[in-house]
Length: 118
Image (cartoon, rainbow, N blue to C red; front, side, top):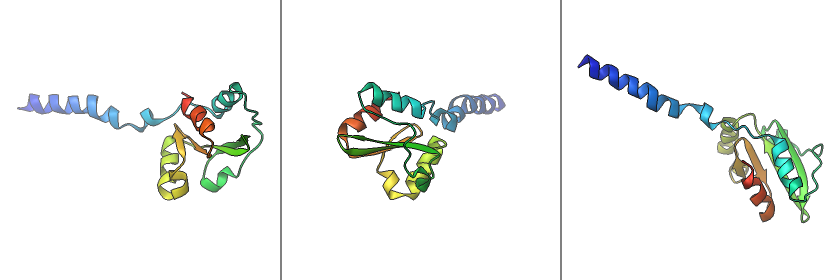
């Protein structure tokens, strides 16, 4: 009986606990990768143009325009931080998310590019 308990605990620690780890949620994406995806698509992006990203507790961001529509990309400290902000802020909750990044725009082509970044 003790062997079954030990085997059960071992399997639990090997299979279940790693799946619960938040490390797997973290994103290796960078703001530069998003900017490059847009510039590769022919969009002019000035990485020095910043929106008020601090208003949504983001750590960085960039704003540019596609077809006269604003495109705002917000970088959060982590996926967990973005998810927390989305729970607390209904507006952020409606934005597209990719890793620790959020996109605020009504431009469908901008959304497609954002979602394509891996």
